[in-house]
Structures are given as C-alpha cells and as structure tokens.
Image (cartoon, rainbow over the protein chains, first blue to last red):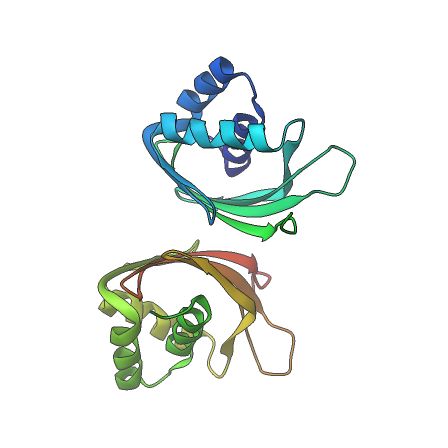
Length: 121
Length: 121
C-alpha cells in the first residue's frame, strides 16, 4: 500500500508531467479507471477527462510546477495534502488543499479546495 | 440551500449539544438519514451511530466545547472547515479539519482529519 505521502507525491508528479504519454502512464498507475476529480473550477470523471484537466492547466500555466506544502496526512483510505503552483524559488501563484479517497492504494476520488487564487486578470 | 458557513455552524452545534433529545433533533435537520462519519479514531453510519460518537466525545471531554476556526469554505456540495475543542478562553486541546459532502443541503458524509491531538495520557 502507498503511504499518504507516496499518494500525494505520485499525484503531484501526474500534475507536473507535461508529456501526455508519460502522464497517461503515471495516471494509470496512480488512479483507478473510474476516478473522479472536482474542484471549484473544474471537474472530470475517468482518467481521460482528468488527464484533459491536467493538460488544460499546463496550457494555462506553462512552465509552472506543483509542489507539496508540508507533509501529507492520511488514515484508512483517506489522504489530505496541500500544494502550491508556481515558479520554483518564487512565491506560489495558486495554493490548494486536496482530499483524496483511495481504493486498493490508487486514487478513486479527489476533492480540491483553493487556498490562494490569483487576482482576476 | 445552506451556505458553507451555515453547514459548518449547524454541524458544530450538533457536536456541542449534550442533551440527547435536542441533539437528535438537530441531527435530523442537519444530516441525511444514511450519513457517514469517519475520522482517524472512530466511524459511524447513520444518525444513530453518529449520535453515539458525539455522545462518547461528551463523555470523554465533559464541559469542553467545539468552535469553528476561521471561515468555512465550500463549492457545490463540498464544504471544509476547521474546528477546535477546548475550554472557552483557553488553548484548545484538540483541533481538526473536516470535509463534508452534502445532499440537498444536508450532510451526507464527513471525513475528519486531526490537526492537533493531546499527548497520550
């Protein structure tokens, strides 16, 4: 079984992978096929849709990367962790906290909340 | 529809109600009948079991009360908020962050994480 930190690290690695072929492989190792994702801005069901959401974020924020903020915390099938999006070494432009439910060590659902959002352009 | 803050306030009111008859009424107004609750220490399914968990916390921590820490945050059917348990005016002895999914404005599931736990006695 993955630990809470491993789940969080693998999840962040998916979000940071800009190569669609490699990302799909990471996703298949990390998510169950019918995984769901929802945050205040977007939602998707299944690996293909979630992959599309990740690709859209890469298109919107090219060159930025996600990192974990602090340790992940988990019990049973439940994991929570906080993350930041930004240019390494600079203040993050988006921060959030995600809540994950796993099934057999893979991510079955993600509910994401935003802790810091950029001012509207 | 209840706002995120109203959901959080009603939920905290349930946890603070020591009278079992009044608490059951509050619970029926706040939770769906088949609601689920899980945190690192306990779990329950349905209002009667969750009511039992709340009663057990009152028995363990008599005279202490729960309060919200900061504003609740929500989107769609999802709500998160942080809370503290302690004697009013003193430093809290337990803190946590709960993630709630609602159905038609009532709580359908709660996943609770602990942010501060007392040292083992």
